[in-house]
Length: 248
Image (cartoon, rainbow, N blue to C red; front, side):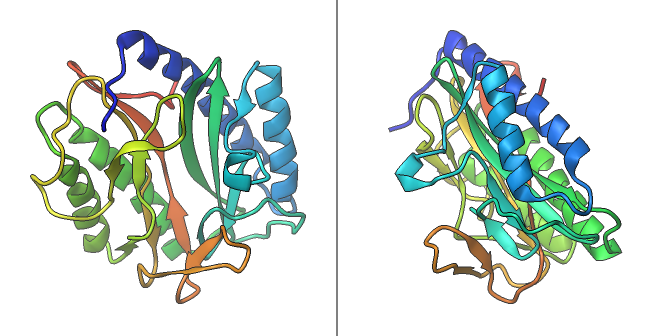
């Protein structure tokens, strides 16, 4: 069942999203060769506490960290670690923020130092695909239009879209209906209605879209070891068009 949110609930989630966006902007200042994702993890814990928020994914189904930190070929759910990032790496930091019971979810991919032209293009295409998807988030369109917008753009640029992980509804729990694939056919799936709130979080790979699962039970990586990038926002459907809750 898709739970439609009231204007008050959406505003509460937007307040959470503003904290999340501010945290990402501060993380961007920390991303240099030599920093570790464990240092970023500790920064996020402190930042959220300072702002009266908490990391919702810490403890979720046994997950132990405030952030997911996925490096290079890791698609998602990478663990923070003490290995220094190096020049040419990319790292995706994904987090869910709980502020007064309202949740917001957003991931950004950061480049470390100087990266290759292919890597830079991957990151830019991934981010642009998210915003192309957001453009079609208007009442009357369908969930399938979102995935179609992403897939057609990404594949035209020579990259592939991960199938194993998709966007999702969100409210006072992390995962709700609807499911939001980042691929597929237009004019398919549930119609978008005012009050729907969900994430769009395309994961885009240089090579194959196929994923392999780490023995830790969480981390997914590209099957061919090539780089993967991700951008994610939490979106509300309003009568005036899409509202990005994880921007200020």
